[in-house]
Image 1 (spheres, rainbow, N blue to C red):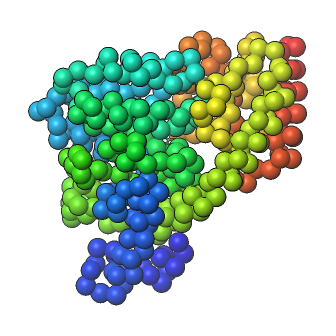
Image 2 (cartoon, protein in one colour; image 1 turned 60 degrees about the horizontal axis):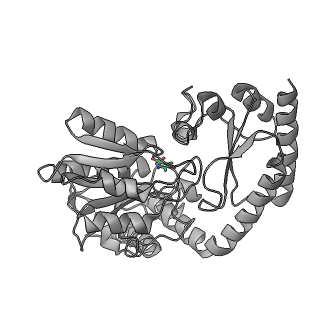
Length: 361
Ligand SMILES: *Cc1c(COP(=O)(O)O)cnc(C)c1O
């Protein structure tokens, strides 16, 4: 990224001089990397400031472009707030939103999805992988149902890009939100994949101006961040297979001793989940005390990183059927590229002793 702050500082939209060309070439390269990662074409990638903006652009953009066809949207209870809140906003404008529940394992029921579809349904938004419990939804099956009913399928893949195989053709995805910082890229850059054919998705711009990104998202492109985004995805894809094997081993190594604790639950489907994600709930333990007890050994926070200031219990865990109390007494472990087997042993030991002392109290 650094040369694009200092040496190649041109504006990628300045197509009349060399500085602009250098920046444009760099942006083009990331577009190709992202397109290849999801089996799309480069023109179908629209850069945004992250997945929040991509979700807003997808959901509001479709609603505005298709409102004459219908005003009904289907989404899921365990979605990120960057999907749920734009939907709630649209409700205030007169759109109707169906929020599908999830099963105990965090997966949606495909029959329920099909039953929720109405003649006026214009959009289905179901995330690829959940940010709290790591559950991976059956994208190909959802895509098939959507396209059989002529409905646009959007997926928030912020947690999935670089981590699991994604293919907009075989999964029949029309819109896909991406972000760089969940795969070790820079913060503040993301993208929306917008399908151009079979079908061609129309999108009303949510930010107007210079007409960048084929008019769908105006604003000068943030070249250094875009360069970092491309590199991050390139590295993640190159390492995906062996890294997923390693992370699965580490997760099992962590879960194995924890699973023996009385009153412990694994949240989310046991296998249909991101390799680096382990989310547990412990009965009979106070959530705040648990947080305090673990703070000295690892970077723990309450809630999710984006909303750790709120004190409400996780809407994802309550959607699994957990009581508020149990939702508070939960931990999500995110195992990543730089974690080692030794760290897993240390964390397992300390978490077990913390839980056991709390249970004794
Ligand atoms: C992190 C995350 C977002 C928000 O992405 P930003 O790039 O931070 O705006 C949206 N959805 C999911 C599932 C996420 O994990």
